[in-house]
Every structure is written in C-alpha cells, then in structure tokens.
Image (cartoon, rainbow, N blue to C red; front, side, top):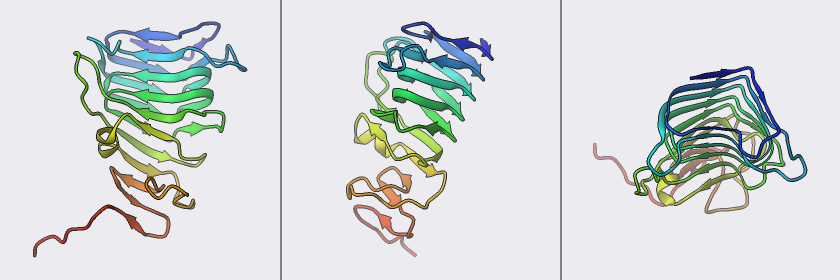
Length: 196
C-alpha cells in the first residue's frame, strides 16, 4: 500500500492500517483540524492487540493539530524527516522504529517520541527506538519503562546543548542508560575494565 502527496484533514482519527505490511506514506499533510484543541491520531499502524505490521515507511510528512501524530505497533518502521507541530505526542512507538531527522516545534508538549511496550499478542515486551538527528528543539523523549530506555539509542543532530538540569536523565549521545554529553563527559552508573 502506498499513500503519496495527500492532504488529510477534517477528521478525528486519520489513517488506520490494522496489519501494516510493506506500507509507505510519503509527502503527506495530515491533521490541522483542531489547532486550539489537538485531537485524534494522524497515522496508526496495528491495533496493539493481535495485529502490528512490518516494513513501514513514513517519509517527509507534516503532522499538525493532533493528539498523536503517529502511533505504530509495526516492526522495522522507518520515519524519515517528519515535521510535527501542535501535537501533544509526536510519535508513539510500540515496535522497533528508526526516526531520522525529525523536526518538532515547542507546542509538542507531552512527548516528541514516546517509546512504549509492544502489546501485540497479549504480552508486554520491551521495544526500542533509534533516533538519528534529534534534539535541536529540546529534549522530550518518554519511555514506558527502563526496558524501553535501555533498548533505545539517540544520536543528536548536533551536540552544542548542555546536558540539562536532570542529572538522572542527561542529554547527549544516548546509548540506553549511558550518555556522552557535549563536553565528552560519560554519564553512566558504573565502569568495568575489559580484560587484556
């Protein structure tokens, strides 16, 4: 399934694909229905119960005035250069998702990215996200649990921002719970020397 160069507005919920297999959504404008009261979901892949998906690509799409821009339960999901504004949550992932060069404005208030457990099949397994080129407009990543944080990697767009005020969650190149900040300081709980 391919959806390209479409404008989708005037809805409570946008596009829902219950079992997303090899789906691509490119160069679309989704939302902008309730600018003063963001509602609905722009794109949703999988139902979170018995269906998810695999091989999903979202590229160069604009999401605006939504509760959640993207909700995905798909594995091997690539979200490239999304533009997200006036959304409470930009991207909520319950699968394995790579997000490349995202742009968020300051009105995305709950989370730029929310990494949550995968509930497809009735369980609750840890998932993770790979964020490349993230962080120029703040740092707002939420994790469902420690497991999702440990499985996520963040490589910022640039490294000229401070580690922030929260010593438990510093900002920088993030490899699970290990963070390297702009000064080259490694934030970690412990170090072990490798044997010779």
